[in-house]
Length: 267
Image 1 (cartoon, helix red, strand yellow):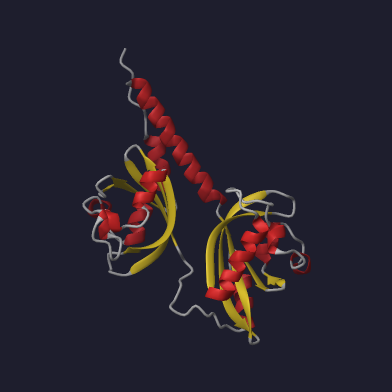
Image 2: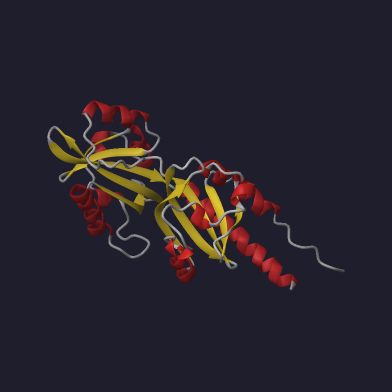
């Protein structure tokens, strides 16, 4: 009895329904697979993208070696960067790119950066404007100076498990984190460095593991932006819970691994 080939429909369904763009690229830099979200992101059809190479979407890249992250992902198996893609309209869109190397191809998970960075790094906005952003933003938003937190929005209280703004602002940033990050870095000095970077350079963007009041941890993306409040520098912090994205990526990788195991078993 001849065994049936493995069914990849479940994996393909996950890819097609993913809320973020997924690009599959061969060793020559040619696109060999894209999902609908990827097409929506750059404005090309699937057929158009499958006739293009990675350099067509990366501004100022003439060869495969010019594209940031390619050599790193081939060497280490995975990589992450913040970059830009050229859309069909000719405009560039900022993205966060997570890539893994699987079966002689690169799989890139691309999420658009919705918080645009302009040429101006100084965010000089009135306190009333920030209050409006607090109430309307779906992400956790908090304000801090060098003495610590002094305000936050309702989503922050929900995410970290606090009952009031007063209770939240009593905590320091490193008290909302485990003692060490997944890579072994101590949270306190690392968080202080990121905050000082925002004060000195105007912004900081990084992934971080946070801790809720009940002790549970969650992965997040953190964007820090400096602004002026009453003539003094302060930092606007946006924290986005990326648990669902991480879980989805893990499920997709597990699906790919099951497929490889089934294929190897049939050989």
